[in-house]
Image (tube, rainbow, N blue to C red):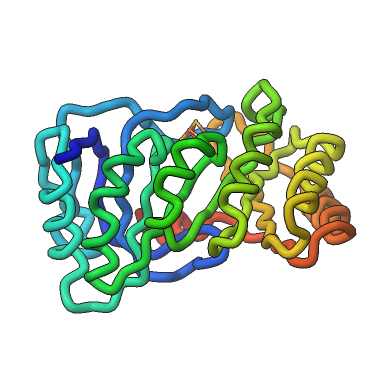
Length: 245
Ligand code: SF4
């Protein structure tokens, strides 16, 4: 049975992207293969996983890491209770670093009537290929060079081609440092795969010294993207407005 180092399991509403507001259970894994400038997540491994004791309570109990698959399935079942819950969202860190674990618990999640939702940085396409059948919804980030300090477009394109045909949308976080050139390269990359893929521009949530983008800049980037893509929306992170996890 697979085991994984998990940082948190809790119930909330999806605060980003296409499924904004849907009731979901979040499984937040440790470990990431990137180091983004705006990252607000501590993804270092921990001795204990924080498990929310009841939906929205923000009261947690500690479970010793690593957790095994059966343990996580039971936690998901208990947290969901008898309220219809749209999906279990695997997030991180980078959840695809734990692809075997996700594969092992996905059928139990579907048996509970929930979808399997993957929030990924869109770089580990080989890992995704191994569990593509188990994933219902993919929220894929494109990380711009101004954020990660390197060009990941080749990996992103490979990922998009493997995930194409799924319920898939792409998210790009926009900061004050986002350049038109890198943004248009990302748009071209998506359009080359499929111009129908939904693109969400997510204005960066202000933390620390991060430089936010002006309204004018965000709208001009949306206009530029709409020349090549059919569906481009601007949606900020919303859960933080109402103090949800
Ligand atoms: S991919 Fe996500 S978790 Fe990893 S460094 Fe970037 S923002 Fe943080």
